[in-house]
Image (cartoon, rainbow, N blue to C red; front, side, top):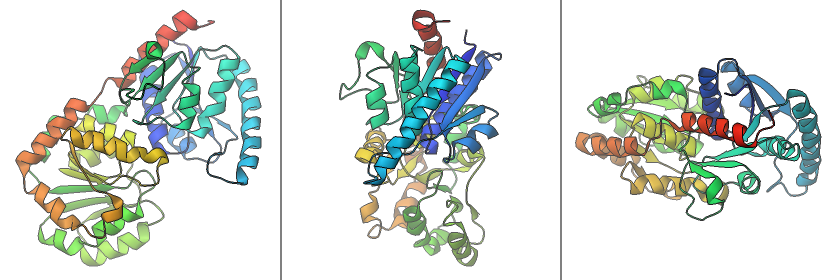
Length: 363
């Protein structure tokens, strides 16, 4: 069993939500386990984690890559984070520490390694980020969402688990995905912070979508909400428009087709819920990993990929309308997504953490 675990990451929902999913699985499997989530002071992780009822511990952390002269200050912050991590870990004494990528989770895992606490990392993307590339060389276990085609990690320590998704999504019956393919319901999601390029692509074709009698639920992101809401109010008043969707299980249950980014967590949710999708990868993601993620799902027949560079030239209404007018096509895409889904990812990870504790732990 597990009695004390520290999970760490931060920055974006793509890192945070898989960690929360694993924390929920630990809590369900070992109700007496003390779980702490360590993250940055200024990211969204504090709000997300505390809403999930998980204890949160903040450490000072800022990204280093791509910050120019500001990276010198970031290095100082990281050093401070390392020292605070050592002090906290000596006090908390976790049996295992697991990181989910992102700069906020780097130093707590490094500190755990120094203190000889068993460590694991989970990589959400097909192309691992810098944090996990470094930590993966020192980790007792590396959990991957995609096969390690580039052989970046020690095969003996690697387990392909898939990407953990939140329990409430898994509990939705995947039969809903097949039923919803009969309707014309479009879910538009630009990630946890929205995406102006996706918002604009949909707004340009609202009149055409209205003619097609498509129900729309659109997550805009907080920064773009008021602008998008006002346009919908004039041109498509029946649409449901929100800055952020709290209840994603309801949103996926609503959708016949999803237009979204291609972050690994989003793709995992699409697969578990069996949702056909039009993917518009974020072009500035590190190593262009979203495009790699998206192409992987497209090759499986579960998604259609549109390059953001060409959105101005693409008739989005036609692409959306064509797919929604072909229920058999949507059904096949849904089935392809479900085959790729790994609803047991969090459970497998927790089982492996128990093994790490038994073989490597100091408990």
